[in-house]
Image 1 (cartoon, rainbow, N blue to C red):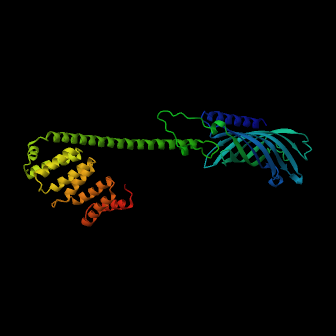
Image 2: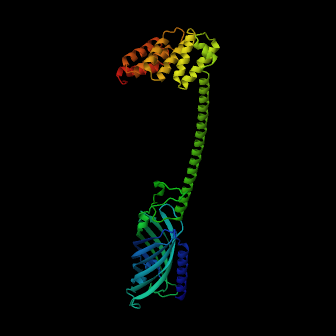
Length: 427
């Protein structure tokens, strides 16, 4: 009897010390209550067939001290039956039981554990004249079990345990071998969740911290947060940080490329502005003056002034471009690029939105025999008429382009614009 008490005290000390050692501020503490039922069978000096299976049921409270350690306090009603020599005796027990459960693994919703504990109980025996009253006894036990998470608030508890009794009088056969019994129970547990865990407080972002997405922050279906869950969560966050770093490096690289492109554009603009300034400074050059005096120009001079005029056009200095192209026409109206000069005069007027003058210039292009700008001029004539709201006249220009220059690069565009003039989609 004293030896059993010593074993009981040692086991209780072990579990209490383990509970204290595993509690920390981050441990998910959760309290639950449940009901269970099952069967138990006496193990004693009598044969197994002389110990019928007896019922047991009860209520219990359960408290998770840490992700791995749980305390359970249980009370209820149970029976142990002995039937030696055909004479049935029933022990009716009202136990008070305290046990500790240590989780050994976790696989999905299953969480197996080992359990150790002790109980005290009040009991009476029927058909036992030697024990007519109510007595108290106790046992120490060990066993296995598992917890199956059904929902965040409900779980199924399955346990099997072996109890060492402190006496050997339950089988009506007192010998040196102490009595014992085995118990198997199934219970349903309901967990009380604190309001703080259901309604999360507003979170203030710390500089450098990454906020998880809604999917990543969703609670898991398990009833308790385990160390494995925390470890996996840390791995996810590290992966997110690495991904964000990679994205940041990519964006920085793209930003650097944009900076280089902007610098190149700025250099190009500066170069064009310098060319424009040089062109403006050469408006009174001898070649320009010789053209102004209606004198002929050499082929090389013509090309030089022609390119200068084109640069002015592309720099949107339309008035100066018109002046140079007109001077070239005056100086050498029979040059092979004379028709081109006339065309660019029309383009310059178009750029200045002087559509009537542009129409007059483009019509003159059609009178040149040596030019490859006639289909260009017809297309621009149609566009000018469209800008003036003269859709019918514009359609004639597009039709003429399609009939006379069927192999022109502007055929597709002319057809598209002609269709719009006929449907009235262009005002």
